[in-house]
Length: 186
Image (cartoon, rainbow, N blue to C red; front, side, top):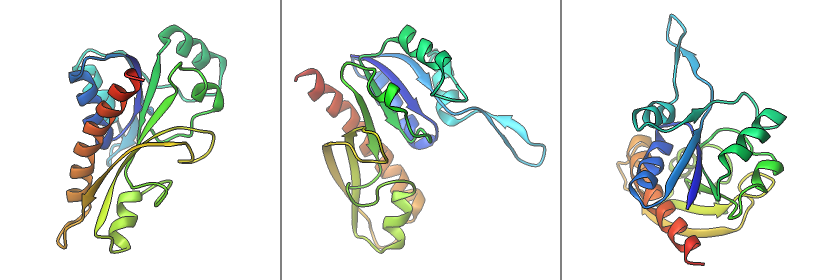
């Protein structure tokens, strides 16, 4: 499968790594622009960009997905599927409708619970004992597409955000590879 990967933080690096280790072709990576950080406001690349460059993947950081320049880039990359993991922007319909097999998101909760931002933090704050990962087709809206696969992950009494983040990152990486495999099998 020819994949365009869209993601930004550490959480997304796990999935990108797993897809690279699978038998699929990562055509390119789209990530957020570098951001100023620290006292000196030095521009720092997102974790996905750093990882992708290390692996020799083409990386693009468009300021918008809604212009002719991005439409042209998407046509040049020409993915069969777009995998989105914590990208940080809502994809316009023109992007959602482009790939033959759609856009698939890795979401850090058991949808439909905790749609939108900060699902891991919200599960911890609410005292949940179980959370998980959902892969889903993306539709116009926030976490509104059809769900594909889910995996539950226990939240232990002493877990903090970092514990849950790392477990869900690893589970998400496994689940997206399984999702793409099932997609190729029909």
